[in-house]
Image (cartoon, rainbow, N blue to C red; front, side):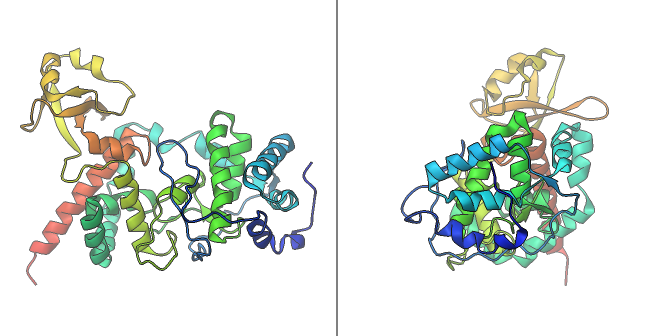
Amino acid sequence: MINKIKASSLIGITGLILCSCSTLPDRTKTAAATPDQEPATIEQNARIARPQANQPEQAVVTPLGKPELVNAFIKKMVTKHHFDEPTLNQLFNSVSMQSKIIDSMNRPAEAMPWHKYRKIFMTEARIDGGLKFWQANSETLRKVEQQTGVPAEIIVSIIGVETQYGSNKGSYRVIDALSTLAFHYPKRSPFFTGELEQFLLLCREENMDPLKPVGSYAGAMGLPQFMPSSYRSFAADFENDRRRDIWSNPADAIASVANYLAKHKWKQGQAIAYQATAIGNKHKTLLNSALKTDTTIGKLKAYQVQPLATLPANLPVKLMAFEQTHGDDLWLGLENFFVITRYNHSPLYAMAVFQLSQALTNRQEVTRSKPF
């Protein structure tokens, strides 16, 4: 059972966790990663700026509960990663279950129809904010685009969709969010248990107090809303200062988003999606929940689908329908569209990123063309 302790006895938890194994991870060794993510390494003595933007969500504190699950997790961390068991017992006695997190998980925005989901992100405030973010970080975006091949407008758009350019990075303690979902949300428990494991490893590597980082209700962190496994695998140190600060350093956040997309095989210079039309209903047999490209422009002719652009017959695409108030919009997603869905496995999300990036590009061009 987890021993009950007073809050004052938590002083020094971070130090105890950092000293709980005989040797800290070597920079040349790979970190464990979840599917779709590559390992990364972290400087052993790196010091990252602590998240400051948002205070933890104020809510009635509920004990974490589920001691059998928590104790099993602690045993795993001790056996697999050589954490100190009494230290983890102390840590989890300060973790709380947040029922509001479960409520949020049960009503995700991605469950909305497209015409409602789109309105969340395609606003003047988000477009104007994106233009200001782009202008303020233009040199970083230029360098990162040159290095990775990921367009500046896509990087800005993702940060805009995720946190409105850093203005809303979340207000839950990450450990509360991940623990609530790991131990109280059975249908996604394996995923969030894995992320909780990655989070504790991250805190040990980056010398962070696990009770301090703040993020979304799902445990996502910083301007780009990286889950812990994504942070360990893809967060980038743009300025080579041995800090990967995705909370308060836009340069690191920009480089991290680009690195994530590049490592997921972003195709430089390739388009993202094209609109299409169809005659009849035969095309509906091609509509499904898969996200990868599964047909070609040439094969679509047999289904009476016509792209609204001249495209090569052998171009791999994915036919998708987006619900409007009167009928559906048909789109053809290319391989880069699929890459965006690696960030969030939702075609609505990827389409929002794509359309916001178009709006940002158009606004940028209009701004440049205005006379002084």
